[in-house]
Length: 175
Image (tube, rainbow, N blue to C red; front, side, top):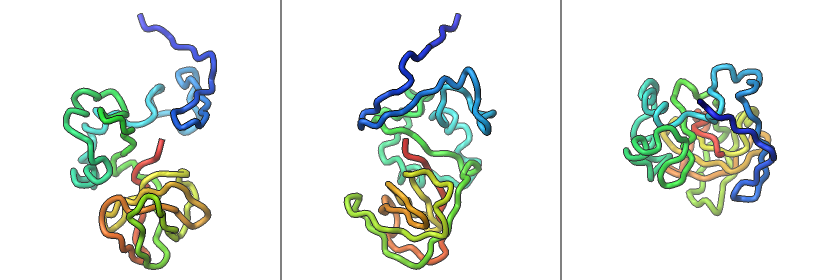
């Protein structure tokens, strides 16, 4: 018999001190979430493993985004969104990419996380406050904040130069 977890305090303090309100989605599903399993805030490692090569993702792309990801993560943490090294696996299949913007102007982007660059784009509307972008040149860019038409971030992997008009696709979302 399955037991039910009832949260008494719906506000949880994360390790970084931010407060998050928790909602039990097994009781209701918000509009637009009909196809999501309650209790799973994204693809688990095993669900990603079974669908990863349906799109354009390659092993090299995963290695850039998750340099510590190993085969044993899929074996030992298959029903989790966290790897053995403690990183949250927030990647998605290519078919699930849903946000795209275009680079405005050519730039050289910082590769230093402590000195993020202002990256001008056609729009940041609908993008989360922080996440990763993948570019047409196979760059992985982490952005830690945004404002209207600008991401603030740095190149994690790939060339530092980016061209005017390059596609920038939401690759993963920071938890």
